[in-house]
Length: 379
Figure 1 (cartoon, rainbow, N blue to C red):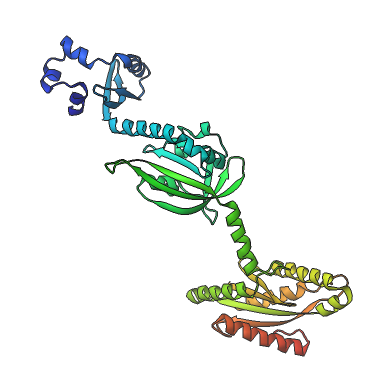
Figure 2 (cartoon, one colour):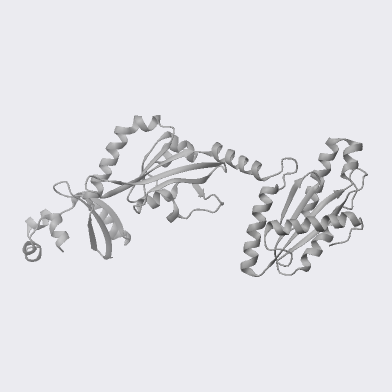
């Protein structure tokens, strides 16, 4: 009741005792919304409209039909919200030229999570036109955001949504999946917008295409951790991965197997067919070894014709012997009519060592015993 009195500037006595008077009826009449009221009564469906009151006040009126020609009207003062919106619109016009010159995309939303400002660069990053973004709810923007592990961000995790909650978001790198299926890596900064009184009236985010930088960093990391010839993990990646596997195995009471191989017959291929054929042989061995293990296991090349297989998270030690048998069988088919084989040494965590260094040393010794014996026995 007090809100209604404030809206029409009526005293409580006038509204309750003089409802039928012409003066009261005239002062509460909403002729501009007569059609909306009539439509609500006819449809018997709730309606929401915004109505300018006196003295530059705005009200949000929710009309709920009660049957017949009666309605229930719920009023909300939205004057401050409308003022903030006018400020945003004015800022849009004032800063339009500046925004259009920025290489970074810029998007501003109001407290209803509706886009009120967007520049050409942002539209280009989203893969849409400015017209398709302007005045659109944030959850209607046709772009999916993935984190660096490829997981879809929920609405609550979106940088602009977080900024609406008062958070400041810096340097968040996400992957855009645009509606045409194209992918971009984008760095986002998002901040709440506040007026001179500290009241938040929206949020702003900047978007920078960092696809080239991210992909270059990935290439650099891949090159640092992988053998250039075979694409397998190198010694650095092997040691890091093995230590991590040992940590997990210790916590879960599981075993880890290390299988080290030194190829037999590789020197003959190099000497008779040349180094190009030798490189092809190494790639072929790498491919065969990958097919012998699970996705979570690791195959690495130490250099030359030496390889290591790390079998992680084993529930039983016998799985190592089975893997070794698969490796031996994989090397049976000849390469360009030349025989390949391998001396193999095995180390098992925790019985043969507790660190990556200990296990690799144990497997290396066992491999050279096998190589010296030349009988292909597992040691």
